[in-house]
Length: 483
Image 1 (cartoon, rainbow, N blue to C red):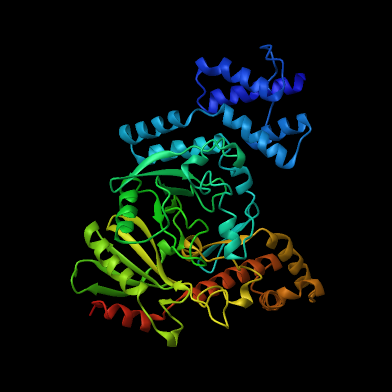
Image 2: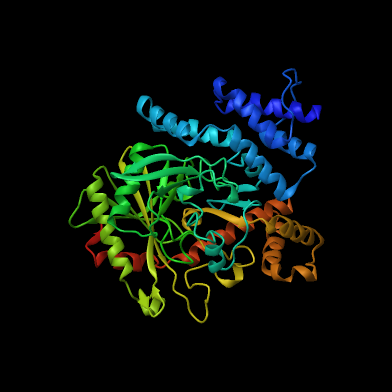
């Protein structure tokens, strides 16, 4: 028991140093931790255990107790939830930093805290492969389950029994049945309405967080959405914030609860330049442009938030009613609505920059998973929904690919594809040609180029218009090319 006592004592010291455990609460927490771990108590002279990371210390604890897998994860959550300060204490400090310093100081502290209390699994995230290719960022998320069926994706983020109503409701804070004892959320206000902010435990990018409506109300996009996004970047100008299309297959997996996603990384879409400059007949001082991007994206920029909202709403209203059967675009049919947008906002020295991504989830006999979705030849790499984050150029590929593609690389080196990898036939052929061309020093480098190329082609699949059709669509609503 002496080693266990030492680990427990080290955890308490960790809480004092990293989790803001108040000295007045130390005895209470030590006793609660002793009860949880089945210890008699602390004697006060326990040696300090050396560890290389929070996860490493917690793994030592689980090993000492002889538990692993799900049981170990639950114990880690219980321990760190006990050592973390209360939601009120976290919220109070966040608000105080916002008032006394600024939004960046508040989010910097909150993000570090969520790593320190092991809600954000940064040790695991840092092990995910990630690289740049073809102007995109490609990641393989080994911690995230793959949902190839949109219905399973939705069910995977619902909670049977009705409490909490979904995985992002605030009632998840401290909810043990989902290992949310370490979850902490903070209050924010968006255009006068109560929302809250939390970080994602398995974030896809730097400081990946979620702004969630305090009311459990379905995802929707209207003019108010644009004001909400702009209000957020007013408060946190170092972050972007965007909204998934509120439809299956092109939206997020939690459509039952209104929320946005954002964070502290500049995504590839935000770096994209304007290819065709436009002006709105009514608001000639608003900069509008078609982006140089494989998807269909219209950027609206101005220092006047009312004008940005007005132009974006004009585009949204026109698109959700837009039909062009020759292009495979059908706004509504017996299966419901099919056109939506994914807006995403950043704040620059030029004002508010809103990128409006046109999306459609229509299906056909040829494309039962979506006409404007990854086409079947790419499903071996990515069949899941192409949501807000991928649409902005950061691809989250399934964890299975790490091992599968390593085998394909071995086959490229041998010059022959193994029979059990037949579904990767086109990938093998393209990587083989890339490597044989001499452009890449290793097969692995050729494979990274191939993955970036496939992701770029998937984004092209999602495009609802080419430039000419985009111009025609915008001209109909009074947005014309600048002369």
